[in-house]
Structures are given as C-alpha cells and as structure tokens.
View: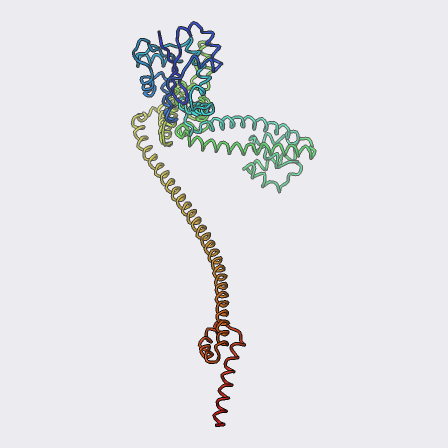
Length: 560
C-alpha cells in the first residue's frame, strides 16, 4: 500500500495532509470531487498531519520566492524531513501542485512525487477549507496573510522601485503633448474668429500665444490710439510690430463687431492665454522631475526627448533594459515593420531624431550619429536607473563625447577615447556623490536637532504644567487643612473655656460653704479665672467683703 501525503503552501505556512487509502480514492474520483464542497465528507478523506507557520513576513516572502523559482528552501526541507514517514512497509508518496517544485523535491530528498489527478482535487478542497482544517487559524487571518504576502511578492517579482517617479514623467509628457495640440487648435479658432474683425493682425503676429493676448488687449480695433501703444509694445516686445498694428487698425478691411461678440472672443482668448501659461509651468515641472529621476539622460539628450523615450518604453527600468539598436528606432515601429514587409530600407532613427545632434549633422552622417547617440542614451539610462545617488556628471561627459564625434565627422579631428572620458567621469561623480551625501547628512543632523529641541520644549512645557497642577493641589490642600485646623482650634478653645467655667463654679460653691477662711486661696485661682473670663459678679463680690472687714477692724481699734 502507498501512503499519500499532500503538501500545501499557504501564506501562513506549510501544511502536510495525510490522505486515506490511495487506491480507494483513485477508484472513487467522482465522489472525491463531490466531497470537496462538503467539509464533513472532506474531513473523512483528508487529515492534517503537520503545520509549519512562517515566523515573519520576510520568511514567508523568501519561501514563496523559492517555490516560484522551483528551489527547495531550507525551511521546506526541514519540515518534510521531520514530518514525512521514513521506512516501513508503506512507501511515502508526496503530492504537490507544481511539477517544477516536485522535480526539485524528488532530486533533493529522493521522494516519489505525484501531481495532477486526485492530488489536484484534494488541493482544491484544502484551499477551500484550509482555515477550518488548521486549528487557531481564522478565515480573516488567512485572507490578511494572503493579501500581505501577495503585495510583497508582486513588488519583489516586478523589481519595481517605488521611490522612482518615472510615472509622473510619463503623465506629464503625455499632458504636455496634449496641451500643445489643444493650444494650437484653440489659437486657430481665435485667429479665425477675431480675423473677421481685424484680419491684418494675423499677418503681423505669427505666434499663437501673442495673438491671443493681443486679441484680448485690443478688443474693438476702432478704440486703438496712440495711448495704447505702450501696452502693445509690452505684449509684442517689439516697437515696430506695435506701430504696425496701430497703423493697420486705422485702415483695416475687417467688419464691425458687436460688444457681445467681443466679450465672447475676449473670454475665449483669456482661456487660451491661461492654458499657455500652465504649459510653461508644466514644462518647468517636467524639467525638475527629469533632473531628479534621469539627470544623465536629460543632460545628454534634453528633458523633453528623454521623457518621451521613458514614456514610450513604459518606465526607466524598461528603457535601461533595451539595447542601443532598439533605442535608436524607438518610436518608428511602423516604418520598421513596413520596411521589413516590403524589404525596403529600415529607419535610421525614431524619437531621438528630435534631438539637436541629428539636425546638426550632415545628411550622409545622420545615420551614424543617430547610432552613436542611441548608444550613449542607453549608457545614460542604465546609470540613472541603477545609481544610488543621481548626478548629471556622466550625462555631461557623454554629451561632450557626442559633440566631439560630430566635429570628427565634419573636420576629422580625432575624439578622446571612451575609457579616458569614463575614468574622469567616475572620479568627478564620486566627488559629487560624496558632497551630496555630506549635505544630506547635515540636513538629517539639523532635522534631528530640531526634533530634539521640539521634544525638549514639549517635555519642559509638560513639566511646568505638572508643577503648576501640583502647586494648585498643594494650595488647595493647605487651604482645606487650615480651615479644618482653625475649626478644630475653635472647638478645642470652646471646650477648654467650658471646662474652666465649670471648675470655677465648683470652687465658688466650696468657698461659700467653708467661709471666709478659705476665701483667700480663691485669690490664687483668680488668675486662672481671669484667663477663662469668669462671671463678673463673682470677681467683684470677694474684694468688697474684705475691704468692709478691714474698715470694721480699724473702727474697733480706734474705739478701744
């Protein structure tokens, strides 16, 4: 009997499933297909033997890359060696979905591999019920793992650098071409519309943007005078043209125009003027983007032509992968295939024809210079694509080489060797890159210092706020304590006063009972009584009695 195990690769990890008697299942293949949809029946056919979860997203990406390339990863090898039964009467057979990884496993581990047939149906069921077959794995967690691994795998597979902004270049050059067409169409419409009123202006002013500005400025030609000559000179930047416009307006053959028609013409011409201004802004934006993404290509062939090459190739990476022969005829595919079909002459240049070098070359040298220029463009695009710090040093050197080659075709002066030029460029590029890195480090240091200061300021502000809160709490507590202490003090004083008053009353009663002999000790108690504020009547009676007794004694002495 053969024991079949099925290997299933999931974003969460590797799973090994044991399948019951293979012969029986092979005979009942239609029943297996029916039982795939029912989890109860499928559990009776398949049982989870082992599960190896990936430790991290990076580990999952490494494993899935190895599987896609048909390589046995160390984790997969260890998992299968640990969990597959070895030896015994029953032979272990492993079912896999991909024949490429199956062949690699057979070569690496010496296993008998099975693909297709019943294995494909079982794997379909495992894929459907995986989250319920593995304990602790929910459907939501499984889908999240698949989504995250799918994104990281796709990014790594395409080898696309997210930091490159060549998509912006592609969109901006497409918009620039569209704006050129639209501005040309709208300017012709303004010329035709305003030409009914002032036909002589078309011959005087040939530029579309200037014509639209003048149509907006002049309006009704009959209102032009010597006072408006300065404003005309500002627009045309030429005093002779301004004077010609003024003279032509006085003897124009055009028809009269109503004010409402003039309003519409002026509004439309103002729209065209704003479009031309936006086109200039877009061209400046494209220049800055090319300086960031492909500075060498822009320095060699120009921003617009370089952007068109990138756009036609699809990305800077694709352009870097092209050979020089493809770059040379990029944009002339129709002519190439027509020439191949009719067995005629193939085109010598495509988009690179718009560069200044080919226009400056003689007719017999156009093909040679286009081939040389395509070679240098390929070198520049590869440097831009794969260099860490973008600089325009190589582009400037390559441009000098093309200039030298042009002069060689014209005068026969021998140009410098490519090896010497590239050595100089490497040295200069190293210096420039070091300087750029130094500037970046300085910026980072300044940024860190600012962050530290900001954090310190925030911490000090928080500390001050906490101190203020603590002081408020203390002052509130002290105030409450003082109020409580004063209240307690007053209560204690009142209690003491009551006790002292009670003691004095008792002493007075005793003095009254004991007679005059014990009246004298009451004087000693007098001080205590004064502190406690006893009743005034008790205080005043005692000294009066003593004084009367003394007077009586004196009288008795005198009588005797």
